[in-house]
Length: 204
Image (cartoon, rainbow, N blue to C red; front, side, top):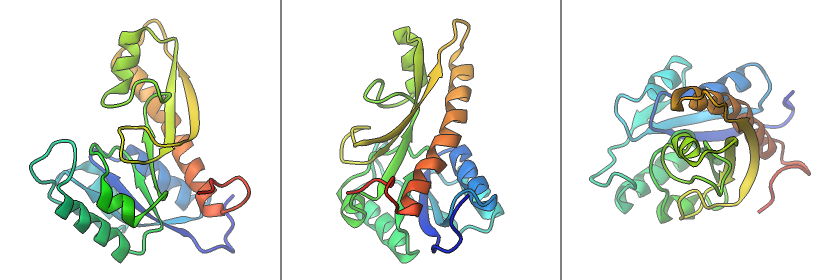
């Protein structure tokens, strides 16, 4: 259980999709497993499910226009993103299905305080749709990784991993669903390390 004596860690969650990992974090907080508070949720997609999910739990949530690039935000918009997170007092930025590269404005504002969950055992299969990459590669084992974010694509220091077997009859959909289930346990656990600030917490 989380330590109620410590102030909750203030999270800023970035996501581009339906928000299943955000939902897992919310559940861990609401059941007392995670001593954290979601200060805000921000998406680059105006109708992303993660925004509706956050709002249904009373979390400030809004859309930030992504600009013209598909894989990153323009520097001026990413600076607005960093300013918004700082405005909400965010201490740890969590990328939960956020489909854009993080660049200098955000990295400088939150040094070593941005984490991402990725659906493979990094360094294998970085980038998009890693579960499909795993099936194409003929992997017997895949999984998920929580890592610190740097300027590269899924290249930051690894914090924790969870393995998931690849079954002979797996489709991309069935494998992705099992990987997501592992993510829903792994990501709140790692956030808990940061919230605890104890000997098992990552040090930077």
